[in-house]
Structures are given as structure tokens and as C-alpha cells.
View: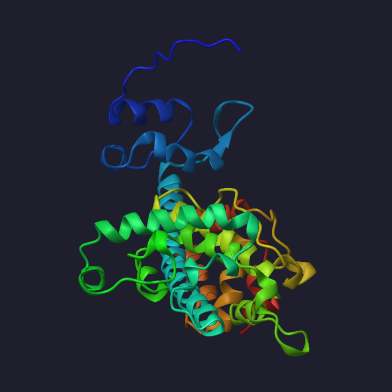
Length: 316
């Protein structure tokens, strides 16, 4: 591969507006466009103009407007905030229900320190989680952390005797660490009578068929959560496909692309139906499309099929 010097010079908001106009983009209010680019980096924003770009000609399709890009940007911003709010609620429930099931089964508030509960090939990963959490806990100045450190220790694991019960420590755990704990548990230990399994029952609480599917969903949620937390584009980005969701849709209303945000919104709907969190996802999405016509125009880029709202999955 032949490399070359990156020699593009700085361009002011005024320069950038002029440049976009030379590419065929209509700018209704140049002063407002310049103000927008003062607040939003052009490198960050230009990807919202790509849906209006004719790649073969390296120019914008006729009648494309700067303001349409701004609409997509604001649509993405509001969609991202809504999704993140839902994920935060789901995350809290994932933490709570995990501790309730495993602590009850093991009769041990320090269950996450017991190697016997985890897959042998995951012990190394769990030790990494424990070490990180121990560091977080030692540095924490929260009242709950200081109270435990000033008064208690545990006798479960000599290497981590300074750590508290999981229901305390989970307040400091990252979503990625919670995901590692979920994926590391030895499912066979939780087998019950009549072919039941406590971890499968936990998965059913979230609408998943079994514990394996729930772990797949958690990974998909983690990916989108991270994009939301870092203010990254979600509306037409490529996302991990959550298993078992596509086959719940009516064949007449399948996504235009299985790796776009539409299928993830369906996943959120399935979880919301089971957890009864009270989010009206369908109405929120419809309201956003009405508020931002450019997003409605390009909804197929986000995986939304024509008449998506008519699928029975949105009827509840």
C-alpha cells in the first residue's frame, strides 16, 4: 500500500458551507449552517449527509439540503437518548435479577468469588473482573464503599477478602463486567427438577428463549449501549444482530437490513413487553419520524421496512 502525506488544510465553517454548495448541496440559511458547524465538528456531521450523496458523481443528488442532514443528526440524537434510557433500565434489572437468582441458589452473598460456579475456561476472565472491581472498590469514596471497608471483610476468597457482597459491588461494575459474569456462569449447576434450569428461567424474565439467547442479547445491548454512551451514530450504523428476534416478525414486514437499528428496536420491544417497563417504543419512533421528515425519507437505511408499524409485534 502506498501512503501519502495527509495535507488537507483547516477549513472554517464558512469555507465548509461554500465547499458543500459546490458539491450541489442546497443551504437554506448559510448563517445558521455556519453556526451549526461551529458547534458540531464537520467530520462528525458529514456522515449524516452521505445518504444524500451520489457516490458515482461525488456530488449530492438534486434537491438535497444541508437542513436534511441536520434533521438526521437531531433524529439520531433523540433516538440515541431514548434507546440509552431504555438500556439503562434494562441494565439495572439484569444486575438485580442475576444476583437474586445466583445468591438464592448458592446461599452465598459473595457468590461471584466462588470459582465452582463458573466455567473452568472462564476463571481467568472472572479473575480479571474481580481484580478490576477490587481496584474500583478500593478507590471508591461512596458512602456504601467506605462503610464496608471500615467495618467488614469476607472469608470466601483470600485473594479478595476486601470485597463486599455482589449486591453492593454491582453498583461499581461496568456493563461489560456484568456481561462477563453472565457469560461465565456454569449453567449445569443451576439445573432443577423436571428439566428446568434457573438460568433459563432468568432468561424468560427478559423474553429470551433460554440463557444462551439472553447472553447473545446482552452482547447486542452492550454494543449499542457503548455507541450511545459515546454519542456515536446509531440510526443507520451496522449493529450486531440479536439472535431469535427476526423469526418473531411477520414475513411481510422484515427489516431492509438485519444489522440495522430497527431489529434492535424490536428486541427492546420484546424485553419491554416482559419487564413491563412502560416504554411506548412504537409511538416514540412514529413521533420522531413525524418530527424529522428526512429520517422518514431514509428510514430504510435504518432497517425499517415499509409499514413496519403494522407488524403484530407492535400491536401490544
